[in-house]
Structures are given as C-alpha cells and as structure tokens.
Length: 199
Image (cartoon, rainbow, N blue to C red; front, side, top):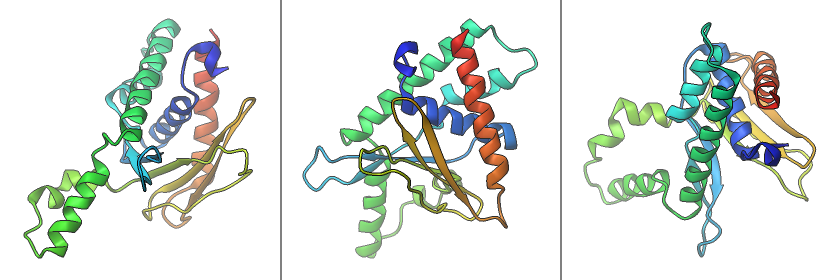
C-alpha cells in the first residue's frame, strides 16, 4: 500500500508514532530510531531523529480545527517521507551526529578534559531524553520482539513492517505513562493517515 502511495513504510510508522504522541500530549519529544551502519567495518548503529519540523507541521495541521485539504495533507505526508528517507540514508552512511558526539563526550571524560558546554546544555539533555525509543524489528527470522523504554516516562516501540500488515509492541512503565492509551492513539493515527491517503 505504501509503495502504491509513493511513501516509505518506515516513514509512515514513524509519522504514526509522532502523531499518536501529539494526540495525547500536544507536544513533540526526543525520538530515537536505530539505523544500521553495517556497511562499515564493525559498523553497529547510528541514530535517526524522526521528529522533524515536517512531522510537527503535519501533526499540527491534521489536528487543527481548520484542517488543510486532504490533497494538502497527502503532500505533507509525502514530504515527511522524503525527509525521513533522507535522514535514514544519511545515518546509514555515517552522516548522523549522535554517535560522533557520544564519542567526543567519552573521549573528553576518559582524558580528564573539561566536558564541553554542549553536553550540559538543557537542549542537548532534552533531545537525548528519548520519550519515544523505536526500532524496526522487520526480519524473516523475527516474529515478535520488543524492548523497554529508555527513560521512565517513555515508550519502547519495537515495530515490524511486512507486505500485508505492520504492527508494534509498546512497552512502558505504568507508574509514569499509559501504554494502552498510547496504543489506541497510534491505532487512531494509522487509520487517520491511511484514510487521508486513500482519498
């Protein structure tokens, strides 16, 4: 279905996560998506940051009382997909920033150097407080899988994209967040986005 609409299935899932969280909390949060860097010798992962200005603009627009036309919303979904695909490609080719900054911070610490101000800046702390920690578990060899949230008030989202369906396993700490309500918001978001695309 995503191929028919000319959008990335991964970007569709990530947009659902953004919209689902926005429906519940009316804000955008630090979001982590793992990306393999296996193209490089001893490559492991880099971080993709799926919460972008394009996803935020879509969440505002689709939630607005004065919604744009479905045609405009479809174009916004496609722009989100283009942006997301670009970020994934950059991360896979070693062009992300998270692992680079992490290494610099560790080197400073191990060398007993002053930790640069960037690493104590509240904005750096906020972007690394990943409320939404996501990872695609799509594989012929994995049927189900999940992992815990990386922060107390967050969600761990292991998701699968197959030819005929997609799904996610959501984990959370029940004292700090509501996984069932978030699951319902994700389902609503997916159906809302598909309805827009089908028009």
